[in-house]
Length: 134
Image 1 (cartoon, rainbow, N blue to C red):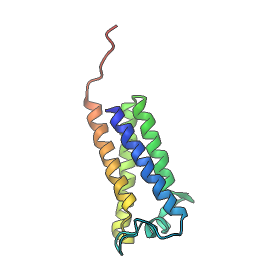
Image 2 (image 1 turned 120 degrees about the vertical axis):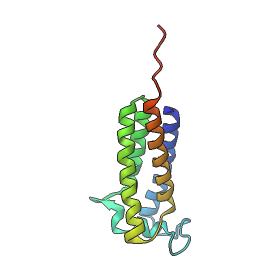
Image 3 (image 1 turned 45 degrees about the vertical axis):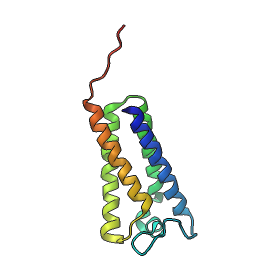
Image 4 (image 1 turned 180 degrees about the horizontal axis):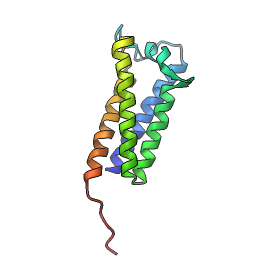
């Protein structure tokens, strides 16, 4: 399970890197689909930064932390971090839905990834740990 969580976390970091790229770019984005799906609007909004730190950069750090925690078998830390990440992602999703009324494809993919990581972390907590046979 830890490898699955680490793999999902790396995928989340890649998606967050793409969102960060949009944050610093002013070109037309490939995820500019229509009036309701536009990563540029979301990533250039006032909600795209916290204390001058891009939300996507926070996502990258969070996903890399989750990968490290899971790879080093820190079950409880992985679970707590994933719940915090899921809560943060749900907060951002609420902003997209109710304040901006525009969706970012990268953000929605990231939301799915952190939800899968959280679910996997919950399952991992209840799988008995194997003990060495020495």
